Each structure stands twice: as structure tokens, then as C-alpha cells.
Length: 262
Image 1 (cartoon, rainbow, N blue to C red):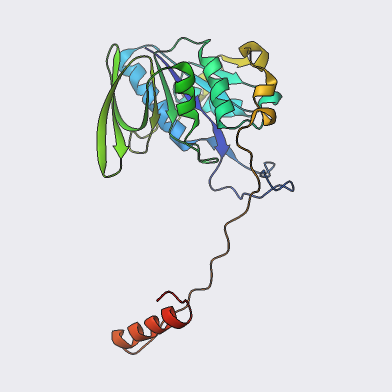
Image 2: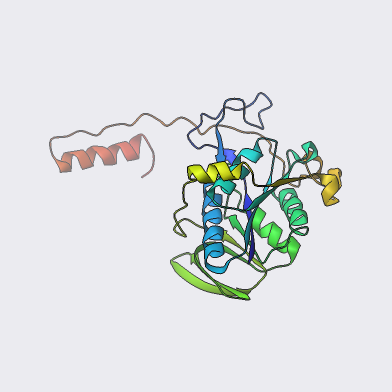
């Protein structure tokens, strides 16, 4: 069973985010970069499938040179090899362009199953996994919380509003991970040492046969108009009173006269 995991490097959610002077991007100089948390679930799922079925786990990632750090993290967890799509012309790609690049790379790799996080915590658009599956013309199952892989099929439990649905698809297929699927393992010291010797192949746009004009800023279908921080919260107004009835009366008066809610 050959499994490919799509992994993205994202800012640590505890990092202090600042907006660049252009108003449409963030400052990256002092940010700590980590593996997208939902992609950690994907790596763990792939490793569990490999342990049960045998085969290989390949990590595929798109991004700048420092993305190799996150690929090495996945290799330290137990993945076998990495593939890094690295080309400055791809910087600034939107979700569809990223899907196009990843799909092109996947066409050069053997795979029975592709696993991705359901979303990345930076852009939060839920689109890349679906785009990859569509471009590869393979089945896709999203927000999976339980998975079982047979020889030629995959059965997944996926979250829907108010419940869970069980979906089965033939391989090759792609599924995206939701919290609750597993608990990602930590990289051990021996794993970290072994990861330094595991291969990482680098692919450029030319290697993938991708026209630079169709990706990056030139190929964007969605453009960021402006970035703004959420507005500051208003000061909380405390309602006091000698008893619940008096407090309720004051609250109603505030909602009616000040807030104009009733």
C-alpha cells in the first residue's frame, strides 16, 4: 500500500501575527513554523495503515525552502521519504493553484491512497484536498474520523451535521482528516536521527510541466483585498442589584434603552 500524505507548513497558532505593510500578507520574520495540526493526523493515519498493510508513506509538500523542516518532522515520525515542490514562481498561489501543483506531483508518484488535513489553520479554506482529488479524477471523502482500508476499497466514517455517515470508495482515493481520527505520535530521538538520512526529492515547475503563468500571483482566481485584525471587544458592563428580580429589570432597561435590542 503506497500512501502519500499532503503536508503544509503553517505559523504556530501561538505566534504573534502582524500584518505586513502591503496590507494583504503577514510578517514572517519572527514566526515559528510548524506542521499543520490536521496534517499531523494525516501522517499518523498513513503510518497506522503502513503498519497494518505494509508499503510506503511519502510526504508531499509545497512551499519555500524552510518547508523541508516540516517534511523532516514527518519523516522523523516514521514516513519513508519526502517530495518538496519548491519554486519561487509558485509563491502566492491560491488553493486551486496549490491543488494543481500537488496533483501534478502526485502523477509522478506511485500511490494507492492520498491523505490530507481537512483544512490548514492559516488560510482555513478547506479546498486543496478536494481540488487535488478532482484534478486526479479519484474519489474523495472529507472530514474522516475513522478509516478502514481493504485491498481495493476504503471505508470511512465522516462527520455530518447531527451525526456520522459511513462512506465506501474504491482505491485509489483521497480522504481528509478531522479531529478524533487518531492521536499523532511524537517523533522519537532515533526517528529524528534516521530522518536526516531519508531522501527528499525537490521538484520545480519545469519538472512538473507547469506554466508559471498559471500559478502564483498570476494564476490566482481569488485575490486577497485586505487583512484586518478583529475589532477590539467592547468593555463588559456589569449589572448589579439586590436580588435577581432587580437585576433582571435593569438588564431589560439596558437592552431596551442603550443597546436597542428589544
